[in-house]
Amino acid sequence: MTLTLSQRKQVLLAMLGPASGGPPADLIAQMDEGDWLAVDGMASQHRLGPWLHHRLKRHGDGGPVPEPIAERWRAAYRDGAFGALTAQAALVRLAAAFADTGVPMVSLKGGQLAFFAYPEPALRPMRDLDILVSPDDLMPALNAMAAAGCTVPTDREAAVARALNGDKHLDPIALPDCDRYIELHHRIAEPGLPCIDTVAILGKARSAMIGGQAVPYPSPEHMLGHLVLHAAYNHRFDCGPLALVDIAVLAGSETFDLPAFVALARDGGWLHGAQLLLALVEKHVAQTGIDIGQADVPETILAEAETLILQDFDQRAQVLLATQGARDGMAATVLGRLKKGLGTRPEEGRLRWIASRTARTLRQGSDARSVEEAAAGARLARWLRDT
Image (tube, rainbow, N blue to C red; front, side, top):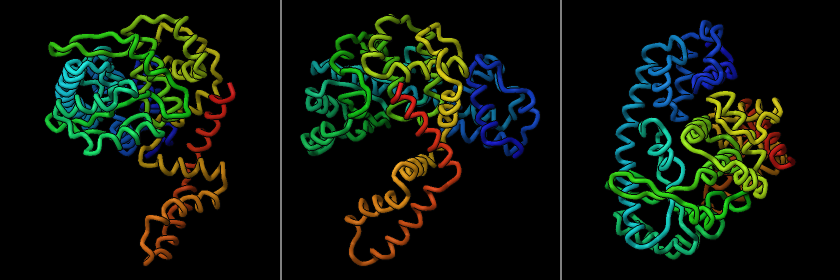
């Protein structure tokens, strides 16, 4: 490979949309097979293949992409088309079941974006479907899901209690007929993080038809807010650049009440997160037609977010460890991990496990890329908190 990691990230981000004018020609000219494979690896990890195929086919973005790479993106698009069919089947079945039992719900994230915002559903891969209901409706929602063919928990009361005690959703629930998992949410952000009230989201929901079934989804302002909260606060940007494409296509397909959105974000304490994400979208994907002051985001903060937006999924645990080590000291981090895991170990072999766990924690927490991304995350978190 001839490019640095940051240069490979730059090439991939420049392929997302017209905002940057495409990857720099000098970098494309330097790329060897290893560089292209690394870019493709990042694209695959972040589920960008279908979108990159779309951009390459329709707009020629990316320059002379090697044919084996382009073929992998075509294959990802074909897989996305099949995946969209199973996602639609699951969403239609769930919406019908919830309507039959009188449980208000909305479809979040990909379940709205794929079918109502993207040019084609195949362009927005979905690992699962996210459904939001009122906390008071979790039990009847589980009953509706069981009627729809979901493999709901045997002890439904315990599952609901666990979700309400410090989580935003129940453990993923399988819908075997559609080969899908469903996350049943009662809030859109983890407790303790900025959020939008669930009752408010349900109260302003609207519906559109899919497969002859009305499917409720959030208002434009609530959906944009959800994407901001998910990427900037729940995930600290480690959810990848698909979040930027999501916001770009949402902005291109909706009309927003901007004063209402700004008031919602300011009152909720997440206006600066919204500004940062819109600045990233307009730098790397496309203009949004939205102005909430994103031009004022410092370049240094944009750079920190760019470091994190293509974070290696396999290293996220290591980044967390590095962050904890920087904040609490590596000794305290090691002791914390040992204390957490020791109670689950049988007495025999504990000394060997302690030695192994200590060595692994020190190794993971000092990985160079993880330390760099952890430092960027810490600085970004301070900016989001202090502004």
